[in-house]
Structures are given as structure tokens and as C-alpha cells.
Length: 156
Image (cartoon, rainbow, N blue to C red; front, side):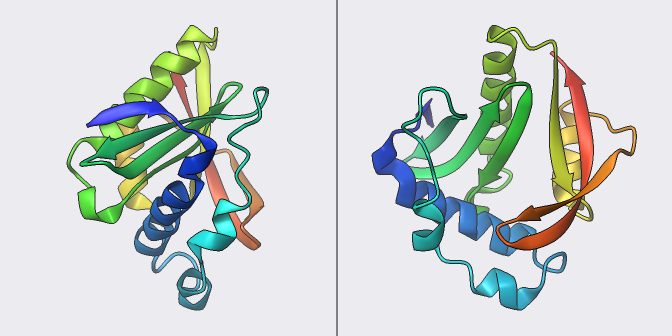
């Protein structure tokens, strides 16, 4: 597996992974009709991979294909998604380790992330990596749907 920074030409491949991860990971949490209607083409045009002052995204590549990505911005892990076909094969662990390293290298002492409430698979993943929550919650609009999120933090 190779990890590298994203380039603008990766947008559609990242969006495919993003949508597939949402459709599998959020099934039963978000409305099925909403998940079924997600299209990679719609998501790809929203990415801003070429902004030097914007978020930093690392992609995971296996056999020439993007199979996961992690995005950080400031002290936040904004996103970490892995294609369901490669879940539990170490892609997520490699991406979270790189994200932590990159956050620490930028001077962040404590990182945070927002996790969709009810996403027990992701909750277990982050807790195994040392992330904890004090129960802080928010309702946020993500891709046009209101979601209940729980904040997690981790010292780096």
C-alpha cells in the first residue's frame, strides 16, 4: 500500500471511495434513499484539493487504485474513509497513523474529530487508536442532511 498526498486529478477516485464508504458505513444510520442517491460525480466537484491553505488529504493506494483517504485541517481529523471492499485490511490504521503524524508535525498537541452518532464500527476504530469522548455533541448539516455527531479527542 502506498500513501501520498492527493492531487486534483484524484477527485473522482476519492469521491468513489467517499460515497461507497458512506453507503456501507452509514446504512441504518442515515436514510437509505439519501445514501442510495449519492453520486461520486456530485461529490468530486466539491473538493478543493488544489488550495495550498486548505485541508490536507492523504490517499491510500493499493494495486493502482485509491482505496481510502484521510483529511486534516488545523487540529481536526475532518474525514477518514476506506472503501468497504478493503475494510479490516490495515488501510484505516495506516491512514490514521499518517494523519496523527502530520497533525503533530504541524504543531498540534491535541487533535479532535466529529463522529456520526450511532456509527459503532468507527467508534471502536477510533477508541482502539486512543481517541476518547467527553460526550460533546452537535447537529451538523453534512452533504445536505442533518446529522448528530459526537466529538472525540486524542493527545498526540
